[in-house]
Each structure stands twice: as structure tokens, then as C-alpha cells.
Image (cartoon, rainbow, N blue to C red):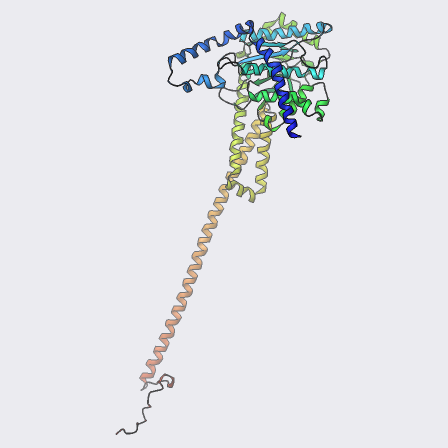
Length: 478
């Protein structure tokens, strides 16, 4: 049964890749996209050619060729989907206007943009239609990975068509992990009161993302018994969340503050996040009056762009992002240190003797781990729990020092007791020796007294049997 499921999963994955990757690759090679990409990687490929021709000593030393994070080309691609029937044209006017804000933003920063305009699955069935998002992203990532080294992007950003870029002065790169750090992180997103929101998110272009999108897309086919695949209206989002909760995926996603790039339209935001001038993006999610809300923001952007589009340096965003990554990195480092700390034999011995200390440590460790995985955007809480865990480690060190002092004191007492016992034994031996000497002295004095009285008295018991008494004369003796 398991083999059949696995073979079915593999077959489904191959079919998906073959069906969608080839046309996307052909589309991807279009002159429009080539010109867009040329602006980004022409200088990189020139430097690569010069580097290779100028130094043939070792290609392995050309790190730019082999470091996946430094491959050149546009670092970010972006994608969305927008299509509908003729009756949807009025509604799509707002979506088209919103999408143009992304295109303008992309033109400024050099992001190739891909727009899916056909319902490749579902044919009108909303729950199945939504999976076109995942399939389209999968085809784009596979197509990108098929590019030669030096032309491959690093991240793909998905944005829903009901999102509006309000401040084009903020590039997507603002939110990425610091260079050289968090290479195990393959997905960035945000959460609302229901959990992960897939209106806008980042996927690293690599094998992990291929596996993730394949698993989420195939979930309704391979696990139809799951309750989440029998509900709507966020069918594809529920599938994405279910897969993200699995062990092999959970540790590779980071959730960032939603107000950075997924701020919901004001009246609908149950978390009372308020728009402020300079904010990057607004999302008209789930609103019945979506068209009206989008129209108001788009009109304001057209009429008064300077009120919305502040320079990045005039906002607090850059500092907040830096603080976010610094806090998360500190938390991860502390968790690694705490794990090694907890597994040492010395700590295990002390924890086994002090269950209260062990419980406090475990609670702080588990809470920080949960925050890092699920809500790292709660920065103050993250900081507080980090401090708590540091205190628990400090408490252990205090306990360790106290135990070492107690052990030292016990050793001193033991040494003192041994010395006392040794001294007592010495005294006993000395007392016995003195008693023996006293006995000899008494016996000697008695002997001297007898001699002084005129003779030596010999005990009959001391006379050998063969000794003749003094008053007996042997026969024949004259």
C-alpha cells in the first residue's frame, strides 16, 4: 500500500513537472523577459567571463560560480495569477490596476514578473482552481533551476492580485535573511489570526521548494481523508499549512511581521494594525466590498503618491528588519547552546537531583523553541523568553557552584574526620604501649625487691624436667 502511494506521488510529481515546466520554460525565454533579465545579470556574466579567462588556476576558487546565494542574475522573481470570464471583467479592472502597481515596482527594481492568465486546473471549480497558484509557482521554480549557473534567481515572491504596492521605494530584498545567514530557511511568510496567510510569501528557488509545492498540490489526491481537503474557501492555503506542520518542512519557514508586506485593508484587520505613511503594501483580503476598498487606495495612490511613497530611510522598516533577524539568530544560537548544555552528563546529574530546576529549564527552552518556529515576529516575547532561558542556565551555574562548594566542604569535613579518627587510633595505640611499659616496670620492681630479701625465688614451673634437685646426690657420687 505504502509503495503504491509513493509511486502515485512520484507519478503525480513527474506529470506536474512535464506538463507545466516545458511551456513555462518556453515562455520564460521570451524576448521581453530576456531584456528584463539582461539588465540584471549582464554585468555579472561579464565579470565571470573576465574572471575565468584571467585566472585558470582553479575554478573552485571562483566562489561566485559555486555559491548558490551568489549566482548572479535577478535575485528575485515575482508571480501572480489573474483571469476570469467576461462577467468578471468589471471586477478584474481593480485587479489589473493593483497588478500594475507590482509591475511598476518590479520595473524599478528589476524583478521579472510572471502572470498566470489561464485556469490550468479546476475549470471554474474554485477549490481546485486555487491550486493553479501552487502549480504555476512549481513550474516557474523548475524552469529557473534549469537555467545555467550565473542566471539563476534565488527567490520567488508570490503576490495575490488583490494586493497593492503603496510604496515602491521598498525592494523585496529588504525582508530577506542577511547574506550568509539562515541558509536553512527556504520560505518567508506572515500570519493573521487564522494562521499562515498565502496572499504574499517568498520561496527560495531550490529542491526544498519543489518538494514542498509538490506535496501541497498532491495532498488532496493522496490524503483525501484529511478534513482540511474537504473544506474551503482557502483550499490551497489549508493544504500548504498542513504540509508546513510536518517535521521535514516546519523548521525551514520563518514568519515575519505581517505589517511589513501583508498589511490588511484597514476596516478588515482584526488585529487593529493601522496603516501609516510609508508602509509598503496593502491587502484587500476577504472583503465583501473589496472593489470599493481597492478603488479608494488605488485612487489615492494615483492622486497623492508622495504622501504614500516615503524613502526607505525615512521609515523604521530597515531597523525593524535588522532587529528581527538579530533576535531570531540570537534565539537559535541560544537554543543550540541550551541543547548541548542539557545533554552534558554534569547537567543531567544535577537535573536528576533537582527536578524543579530541570522543569524550569525545560519550560523556558520549549517556549523559546516554539516562538522561534511559530511566532518569531513577537520580538518582545522572544527577548523576554531568551532572558528567562539565560537566567535558568545561570541558575544551573549557581547551583553548580553551590554544589561544588558543598562538595568541597564535605571533602574538608571528611578529611577532618579521617584525621580525628587517625589521631584517636594513635592515642589508643599509645595508651596500650604505655600500659605494657608500666607492667614491665612493675614486674621489674618486684624482681628487684625479691633479690634484695636474700635470694632468687624460682618458680617450680620454670625448672626443666631433667634438672636434678639441689639436695639429691646421684648414686656412685663421692
